[in-house]
Structures are given as C-alpha cells and as structure tokens.
Image (cartoon, rainbow, N blue to C red):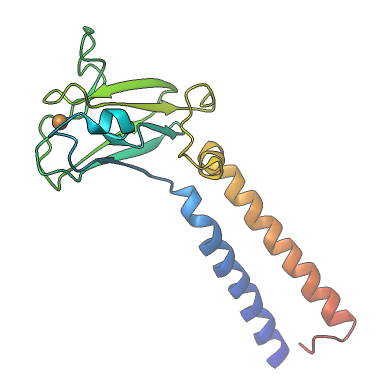
Length: 180
Ligand SMILES: [Cu+2]
C-alpha cells in the first residue's frame, strides 16, 4: 500500500514539474514598450527604441501587447507614414499614458507600423520563421525558437521528461536503490 502511494505521488510530482517547466513557452506573448520620452524628441530614433523592441519577432497566432510607458498619448498604426496603407491591418487609435493595445497576428509576414501623432516613431512586427533578415540583436534567439514551435515542442519535451524519470525510477526500484 505504502509503496503504491509513493509511486503515485512520484508520477504526480513529475507531471506538475513538467507542466510548470514548459507551460510559459506554450502561452508565449510578446510585449512592446512605447518608450518614455519617445514623444518629446527624436533621441529614440537614433537609439532605435521608440518602440522597444523595434522589431518584435513572433509566431503566427501570437498576440503582441503594446504598453504606453511614455507621458504622452500614442497610436499603434499599421503601415508607413507616407504610404496609403495606414491602419488597414490594425490601428489602436490614441493610447493614453499607461494604456495598452493588443493585436493577434495570424498571418506570417512583416508588419510595419508607426505612431500617427509622432511619425518618427516606427516599429515592425515579423511573424513567422523567416525572421533572420531583419532581426535585431536584442532579441534572444531562444525566445524565437520557443515561439516557432510552441505546441509540439512543449508536449514532446514533457513526454521525454516523464519517460526519463519513469525509466530512472523503475531502474532504481528493480536494483533496490529506491525502496518504493
Ligand atoms: Cu506617439
């Protein structure tokens, strides 16, 4: 009786640890900041961080959330300041200081966007695996990898962990190291 109980606890513990370890990558969300001071001057243009990160790399189905960390209102408007595509994909309208705007990207591609109030504020969202050509150095490659295959990667890793732990447990038990 006691050994079965301990064995069950072992399995449950393995599942909990596995889920905790891999759940964050399965629910990947990307945050972009409208940086403080981006409204008052063009210093952020030189630093390429009016929107930070200036090029957010995500996978199809991911949601990008912009947070206004500035003191002025901004917009997140798809397109470029000088083209005729302004706001055709998404347009936040005015986002006040401290406010947020979220958009879910379902189709792969490169999405330029800017702030209609301060047109020097430009950013980009790259959706899909073809992210190498315009990648920013500040984006950790590990995050991109996790976003690329969230579902299969998580489940496969979870099964692998459970399998390894099970084999170790059974081996230990049969050899008498572990008195379950
Ligand atoms: Cu702005």
